[in-house]
Image 1 (cartoon, rainbow, N blue to C red):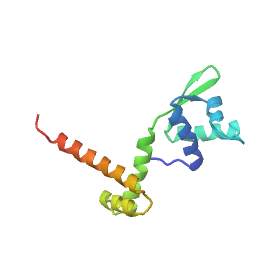
Image 2 (image 1 turned 180 degrees about the vertical axis):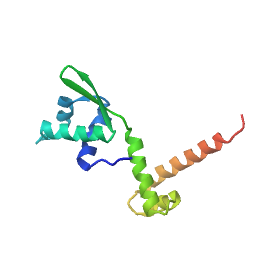
Image 3 (image 1 turned 30 degrees about the vertical axis):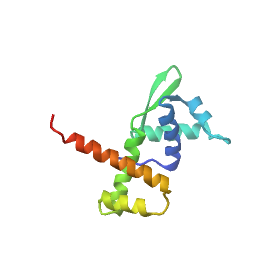
Image 4 (image 1 turned 90 degrees about the vertical axis):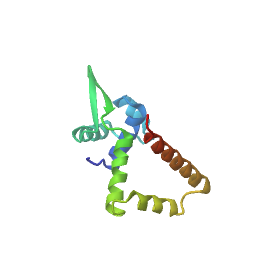
Length: 129
């Protein structure tokens, strides 16, 4: 999957959040000083060429929408990270993440609950009908 630049990710974040957006609405999402219309138009053109966005035309206006979900885009990055830095081991990645010292006790407990729920879901998937 192609990668987005930081500026493109900023634009995509707004598109993912709004789901469908016209240029004027997109510009309103940015804090002051707002980027130039030409700058955002150039980013959108590159993102379209990369296969991340498409648009519908209404007269002189374009309504942009995502072709790739936020989850799919970032899961690809996480998978690349695991492959390149953790010998393609999700367990090594999870261990590093849990032991990094940056998670609070409450966050670790929430993570444990997520893992317990996923284990239960996997067990249910293997039950005979």
